Amino acid sequence: MQEDTTYSIKDMEREFGLTLRTLRYYEERGLVRPVRRGALRVYSVKDRERLKLITRFKALGFALVEVKEIVDLLEAPRGRRKNLQGLRSRLSEQRELLREQCRELEKVLELMEETLTEVNGEIIAQDGGNLHGGG
Image (tube, rainbow, N blue to C red; front, side):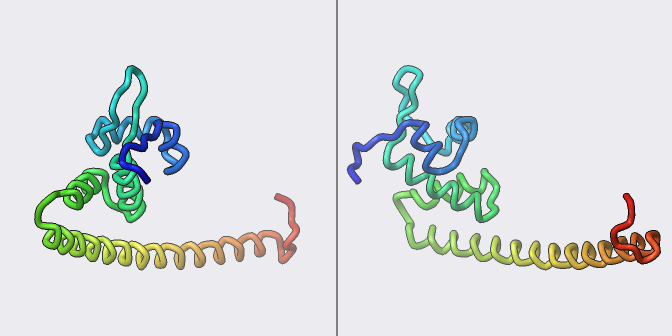
């Protein structure tokens, strides 16, 4: 891919599954900086790479402010190793947070199953054991 390749906002919308509104919001927040040619937004290869990172870190559960910090950190010209170590630490923390959320969701799902079982039992009791009772 050549460095002078450019993309339209529609190209970015299609490739990343983002709405035009979201792309404009990312621009307002300084996450991407497309060149303006009149009313058109022209995205560079660098903008496209940033959007790849943004969508990845959003999918990993990071807040947009954190995503911007991470992407900026990864693009910083100095201290690449230190930046990567910092990123590794943030990713590990996020992984633990997601695991905790999974544990909590498992508890909620168990409670849901218990509640559904109780409700089904009540329905059966109300129907006198007739599973096809009116309703």
